Each structure stands twice: as C-alpha cells, then as structure tokens.
Length: 159
Image 1 (tube, one colour):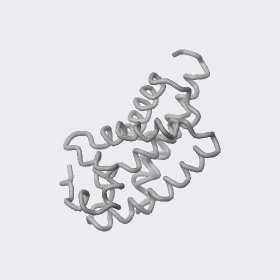
Image 2 (tube, one colour):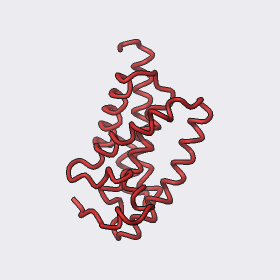
Image 3 (cartoon, helix red, strand yellow):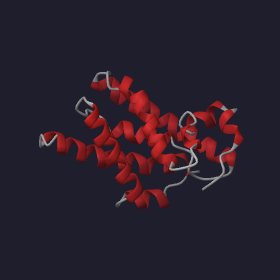
C-alpha cells in the first residue's frame, strides 16, 4: 500500500480526493471510503431524482479534476487512498434505491463486490483509461453494475 501523503491533512483538494480523510485508513481504504460515502448519501437520498442526477454529474466532474490533481501532486496514479471515486460510485449505485438501511447495506456490498472483482469492462477501463477520468471510470462502471443488481433485487421484492 502507498504511504499516505501528509498533504491530505493540509491541502483541501487532497482531503476531498481522500474522501474527507477516510482514504487514509491503514486497512482497506476503498472499503472505508465507501462506508464514509454513506454519511453524505443519507442527505442526498432526500433529493428529488433530477437533483440527485445533477449531484452525480457535478460530483463526477469534480471528482475527475480532484483525482487528476491529487494523483499528479503526490506523484502516484490512483493512489489507494484516493477514494472520491468510491464515494461517487456508491452514490451511483444508490440512484433511485429503495429507502431503508437494508438497501444501503445491499448497495454497499454490491458496489464493493464489483469494485474489487472488476468484471469486464471495469478491469479494462481501470487498465486503459488514465488520469482523473481513469481513476473515476472504473468505480462509475462498478456503480452501474451494482445499481442494476440493486434495482433487480428491489424489483423482485426479495428484501
């Protein structure tokens, strides 16, 4: 694992890219970052669908810039502690999700599964697309896969 740069605690851009500091976790920073993403999600979940979609577009565009800038500043492409991409990927997973903690937990697990296993084309995007877009894209794709599975489960009324 890469060492957490001290700039995470001094530079607001790095602090955001490191998921408000959650990516500085010494163990499983992607998982800890996804857990931290639940807190703002609780507020975002109250938004109307159009505003939620706008939030996703804005946080994605900001994330591309944050991740690019931070990786360039610290000299490590896709440092394990950069977890803004996990934040947005989880929020994408939860797009139009049913209300309730069980759905948050299911969305969390599904997102982590797809983010870790990286089925096609997620692994391809992770390897071939560079810069801030590359850092964000694999997690956005994982969010799409996880979100589709979440909606399927919700539609089947299993939970």
